[in-house]
Amino acid sequence: MNISPEWMRSVEQTYVIKFPTQHLATFGITSVEYFVVTEPIYTAMDASKKELESVVRKGKVIAEQPSLITPTYALNLDGFSESAYEYMRFAAQSYGAHSPGILYQYRNESENLEIVGGIPTEVASRISKDLKDKNNNLSVVIVGIDEFWDVALMKFIYEFTASSASFNAREMKSGGLMDPQSSAGGLPRAAVNQIEEMFRSVQMGGSPDMLKTELDKWGVYSYYEDRFLSLFR
Image 1 (cartoon, rainbow, N blue to C red):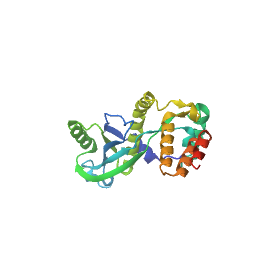
Image 2: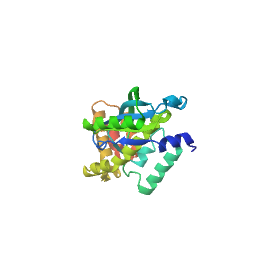
Image 3: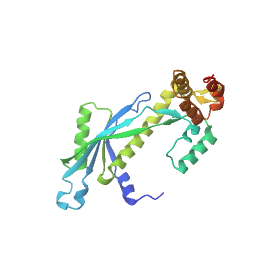
Image 4: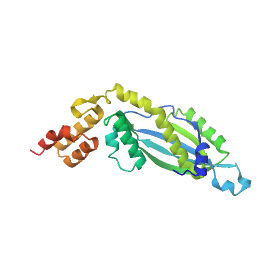
């Protein structure tokens, strides 16, 4: 993988002024308000404006409720590189095809961009103080590089996920959602609950094709085959 020096510089020069004081919710959606503060790219071409203005990009990062997956299920997801699939095969072999992991999914909702007076560190500090005064616990203030502002946001998402993962895992484990179910080949209880919901949906007119696809993704169709076929009798 070739990484440009500019991209690496943007990562190295990105830092968080204010980090959320709450974890990602384990059993719900989390919305984090973000402010990415950068020095305008045009200051590099006009020395007279150097460090007199800052760009503030505001928006929300929406984190869907974390869900349990297994290496088998991950191998049936689209959009990953071959290296990622190779790791999933390694995980399945090392830890078991139905060993639980947590899947996080995010979306970015950009809101606005404005130019304000002051250098980025000063502007970011002002925004941070205002958010703290308002007890806004689910907000982040980041200083980054203008042309790579979204890299700064992705770096935060990675760090926020890493800081929340053990907390989310403990809550899921304490709720029994990671417990292997022998009746489903060792599938975690959370997955079994999801499959049960789909069976009930089919009985009420839902799509059996979607149920069959889900069973195949989890790699447990053989455990449910008789029950699945009985839906058509």
